[in-house]
Image (cartoon, rainbow, N blue to C red; front, side, top):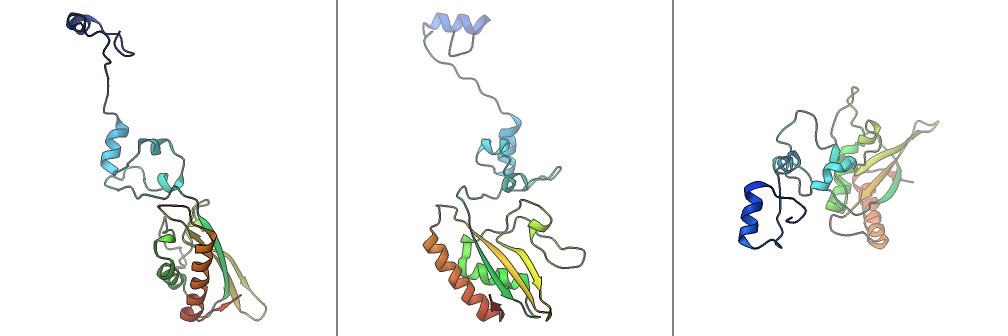
Length: 187
């Protein structure tokens, strides 16, 4: 017996003749998972058994040539920001300002799409459980016709867990830039 495999026939006789019956033998194969890892650039075979939407949402049936986009294993830090919007406000401009201040610490959208009424919405409005960098979580219009929106920002690093102190400082900078560049009134 070599390793955990029992050898039969010529192989067993050859090993006995060599006198090296205490050696360990290895068996390997190239399964579909390994081929998919090479095809899609997936670094870890364990991801195939993951239910994490950040992994599973990257691949669709019948689509070849899609390359895996790495995601962080560290927890996100969520911060909310509410403000009264004006006529020129757009969610795209908000995302640009947030990304300009926080850079790669703000998660990127997992999906991009246009709704039937041409309003760009947050991914979570169509895909429950999906996390986006900047997500609209509340929309309120008062009796005077003024609209207030509340956005949740997801901060996350690829290399480490983020501290409250550094996220609080980033959030204050984001608030200041949003107010000055987008001419909104913070709440």
